[in-house]
Length: 168
Image 1 (tube, rainbow, N blue to C red):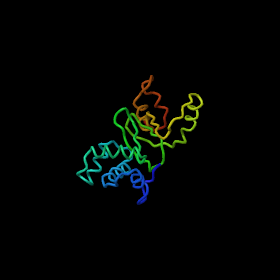
Image 2 (image 1 turned 120 degrees about the vertical axis):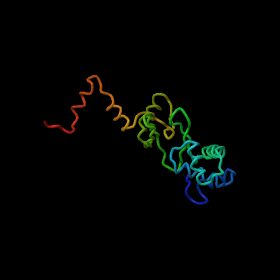
Image 3 (image 1 turned 30 degrees about the vertical axis):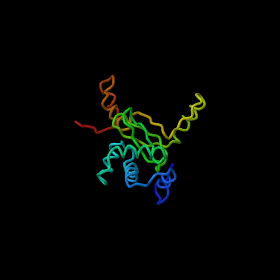
Image 4 (image 1 turned 90 degrees about the horizontal axis):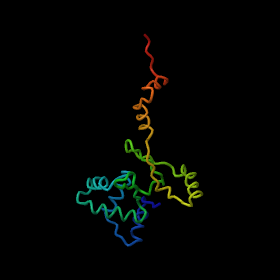
C-alpha cells in the first residue's frame, strides 16, 4: 500500500523513482480519487476540472492508468460496466456492492479469511481478497424487498410484527 501523504514521500517518491515528473494534473487526479472514494473516470474528471478547467479526460485516463500501475490507486469493477478507482492510502478492503441501490460497503478482508482458506484447501486457489467484489443487497434494500413482497399469505405474516395498535 502506498503512502500518499508526506511531502517528498509516497506518491511523489514512487513517480520520481520510476522517472516520471510530478505534475499538478497528476496530483489533482490522485487527490480526486482520494476524496471521492470509489469513482469512475468521468467522476474523477468532473472533480478535477472544478479546480483546473484545462485538464482533459484523456489526461485523466492516462494518469489513472499510471497511478494504478504503481499501486497508488486500485481499479475495481463493482458492476459489469465501467471500472471505478479508489486510493490505496485507505486500508485494504473487500467491496460489497448493492445491486439494488448501488451503495458500496467496504468490508474488512479478515472477515473473508475462512473463505480464502477454504478456496486454497479445496481448489488450490489463493484469492486476492483485497480485490474481491461481492454483489448482493444491502440491509436497506433487503428490508424494502421483504416489505414489498406480501408472500403467499398476501401480507398476513406482517401482522405478527409489533407495531401501533388501533383500539376501537
